Image (cartoon, rainbow, N blue to C red; front, top):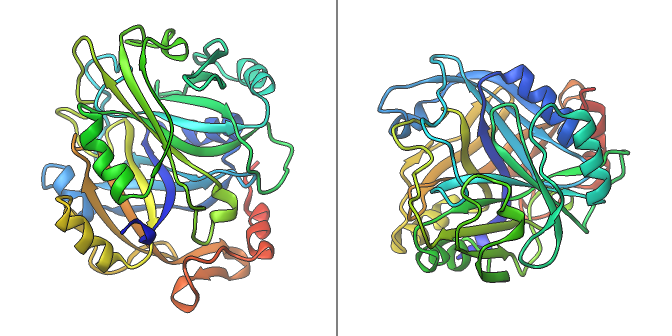
Length: 351
């Protein structure tokens, strides 16, 4: 079934101050290309917002050097709230975004010099790869690692999103979804213990099992050349209590609200997921419009009720002021966009 899953498209994060966060993500993560930035009602999300339709501002941003996009969300119909407890490593849900860079040492120095928020020391992950973690203005964690696949060189120290880390109650049950159905079928590492790279973060000194997954096949879709390879890491804490990150909160409250996947053939994907016990929880049924962007969006829950968005793209702006759009309805959605279209995105960069 996962041949219809092209790969990770974006990571969704809800923030308390949209302009502050967008500025932070541009400066620190190089996410300076905006596909859209609009305010709209979100009736699709009623199931996750206590059956009350909210409105929100959403901006889809990208680092053109390489990596996936990030959807930054700020509700406009209510004031978002943070978790009532300090989120710890292994809490259930997405607790960390992954960012790729060219040099850990150079990125570490850049972030330390340019961020007013927490930056950890450089350490090693279970595979021996160097890494460090940072906090954004809302206290959301991002971890940096060196990446190999780059699309272009814009002189930025890092690329964009390369995956995420999430807490689960049972890794074996979660593997049924992420490995067997969504196509993250290659294990980068599967280790149990207390880990150096988590030591400096809340709850990181406990024993846990960590399984990092990637795709054997290449990422497909229009932005595959930019996205490159991606990973999903599952973390199961083996001692102590874990909390559900969005317990007693709703979608668009502050934090990592979803992981988005690019898909082809939504109907067949839905049938296969339903047979496997992961039915759509909400479905736009037809194309949603966000400005001049048109997509078909659905959600499913993973075994721990973490929100996963599946998106089939129909039309998105490449350079809107030139009238240059990606219209998938007229092309094979699995094929990458031609280089001239992708590189034209640099004219949409926000300084």
